[in-house]
Length: 355
Length: 225
Image (cartoon, rainbow over the protein chains, first blue to last red):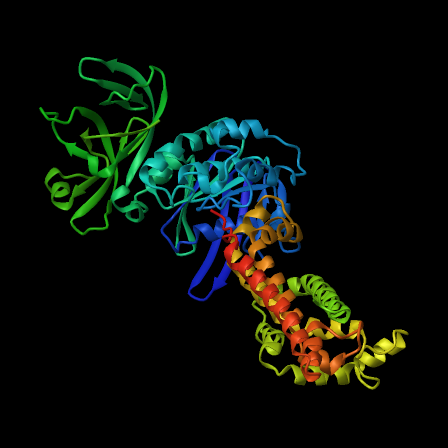
């Protein structure tokens, strides 16, 4: 009852969409894929902006679409954030926020003030959209989508049109949305770093089909998928800040299976963090020696798979209950005799903190 | 300066142009909306029919309208059966004819304005709970206001300048169908060049001021950002 079930089939010249999804009814689900994978089309079908005949969509026990009924977009309790902010230029920021608010007939679960505070747009309310920066516009469009108290928030690459600095400006707001509202979010993206930072559940799409769907950490460590992630192959660990080393400006994060040292990010002890470890930053050694790489873990090889370059191999290593991916050359695999079941020292050169 | 009959003709002209503009705002807007949004195979034919008065000699259009509205024409039989009598040589006959004649001047600028609004703002409106009709009035119309201004002014001024169709349908009845352009023609026929000059100057000035306002104060089109 608490899940989102979606089945859409769409046949267009040169493009076929065929997806059958069973998604959690809470948290942030990322639809990840390259352009042309159909991720945006799935989102538009969910919103009713695209009509997939014969499709089915049930959201937390409510039928939005099946063989006999189809709710038009304006009757679906959704919020939708487009890639471009698409604010109404003839209305002020407040006018944009009120547009959906005054048309919404559902019980308001999110107050307008809450949406404004959550996205930090108090100082902008009287302005016209053409007096806002790109990042400000996108924050207003998110607040506008929240102001209708949606039961499902759909976001179509909301950061893709922004430069890196604007992205960094908005990401914390997205995390607050995810953590502070009891609101399932479907988030379309082709950026692996955004997905690793934000997603709880990950769906990977390719050429109109679903090739993986599952909890983030599980899906990221699947060896049949990293090929599609290319250079971004890696895993995400849930960790806790547990020690600060002021002398060397380092901090230690603990996870199920060991600990890692990283640059001091100024976080308090006990803070829960997501840590992203890219496969290219992980190497294996038979003996723990002196090395510039200070993070040394004991792990067991689970599986090997071909990488997208013939000289490379991806290796899945279990460290405690966590999983890491290592990208090795074929020659290293042969020299070290890396095979499932064997134990190695796992060296982690660097980790990215996703606060 | 202007004689009473000149003023009467001017008054009649302004009344005709105002009524025609209002009628065309009501019926031209849905046609323009449909033309801007449809993918139907009828889009081409309908667009061509709407644009026909642009290229058709007014006398040809007037001739067919006269036949249609005459005692044996379909429109004439309809108006007679409804007890309204016949439309030719009446003010309302002129209104009906002018609506056809000025249709493209209303529909085409509106169609362009609606097309430039695009799909996105309407999709956004739908995700914010606006029904299609609601979205039309709350998003498409405000975003197309410059287009409405242009279309209304072009329709109005074009109706003011109408001559051929008026002569075919309405003739030259003082106070009923004698509009300014016909009045000027009468003055010239009667060799009253001074009167013709004065009335022509009024129309020239009027047209120039209207266009000046249109081009100088034209608001920049609003887009969603």
